[in-house]
Amino acid sequence: MRKNDGIGLGWHQILVTAIILCIIAGLAIYGIDFFNYKSKISSIQLHEIAFSDIADGQYLGEYDAGYIYAKVQVNVENGSVQNIILLEHKNERGKAAEQIVSTIVDTQTFPVDAVSSATNSSLVIQKAVENALEGGHINE
Image (cartoon, rainbow, N blue to C red):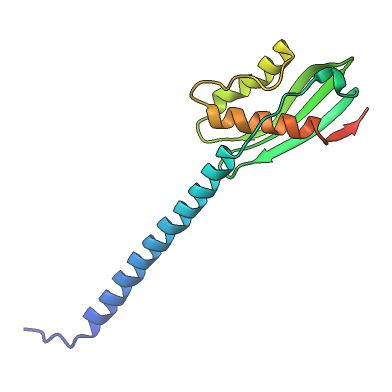
């Protein structure tokens, strides 16, 4: 029978403790990150925009909520939005929200209702559009 000198057990306990601490730290970091994401989403406020008040040109805007990011180019001509190009959209499960740019162009209104099952991405894309039209003029 082999005698246990306690060395192997001590390292085993240290390793298990280190692994548990890493898991706890990872969960804490994820929790903080997720809380920040939810706070950014809930703080999004969209304001009505009269496209007729916007000068002709191309406008670039973006919005980053953490897990969701959108970058758009909005083209305005003769007081209406001619098209919105979704340059980038990083999302969770919100790919369906990408149709919101067509809704804005088709209805010529802003903001529009969120896409069902893609509410957060809808808000982020619209906030990128709003940011573009409120200060992202790139050329005429």
